Length: 436
Image (tube, rainbow, N blue to C red; front, side):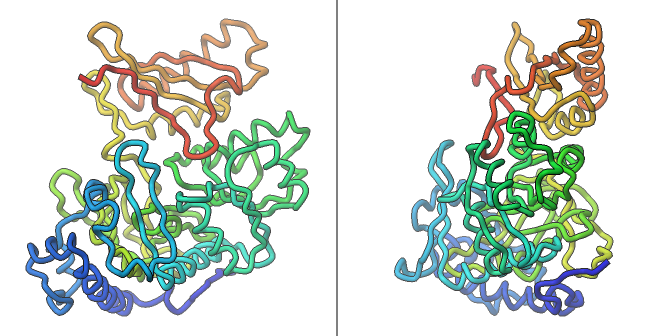
């Protein structure tokens, strides 16, 4: 197999040389971070008053973690390391759950981020011959603009259509013979569910690849996407605090995502103790940005659970691979004392062939007990069958879930299109239990 590279030299650096680059850039990051009041105090508490105090990569563990609330408390400019006149772009969270988090980029920051996206896209085998339909939201969210500029740098033809308007998305795919999609997995499944209404079959389209990300999803969801559309789906990982998309991306082998380690230091920690764990062990992902000057971020606790592959990838890249996101430390549901991750539920229901593309997890109270209901859409032809067959399917899904999450949820079967659809990040969990 021909292995494509954007920057072969940096992507295949031997480990010692890569760590040398990391150490140099970490010292540079510390020098930038010390210009902010927030990190000035934080680094002083760790006994770091200058870049020279960082003697080795092991010194990273002396630096206290950064968490999302630190960014909120620093709103709007508490972590800004340059003059506003040097800032050329601002991205921000919606702030729907409180004070927004804001990220600043200088011009050279954007240039480095764009290059990482170009590297990511090239690793999948996409090239200047491709036409990219970018369905991610543009604006303050980093997903749309970030990949847009990376694709242009590769030389791809970019259709900046953004999210929503499914009918128009499908027509655009037909009109311009789109070959690559950038989209959330839930929305891509929804788009497929509308193909029949629009008189389209996957074979009528030219799509070969999809870059899927921005929300956790299971391997079974990826396989369903690939089977339904007849394409290859590549997982991507990123978060706005660390730039956005392009922190990690799958290569042509699609066996989890290479973290671009010359740009990001990755640690996996035990979320309870904060101590680093070995490669191969699951824990919380902690990231340090090595390439952003306007707003340095050191040791950011992402709350995402994953592991680092201990073995090298056959593509030849030396940058280690991160597993798919296995859950979140802060979205775990506790149902009558049992810990349940939404990702566990998705993993199981997407294995059931009769389950279509949309589902919803609903939690409420019945008396003193929590009640978990999993609502799934199934294919229309199944509703034409006997009631006994539907009941058998419901029981099979319930048993599939019970074997994974221990408890037996209620299972509701719904016709396609009857559950809420999101055109951006999917809202999969509705928790209506009293908060007290």
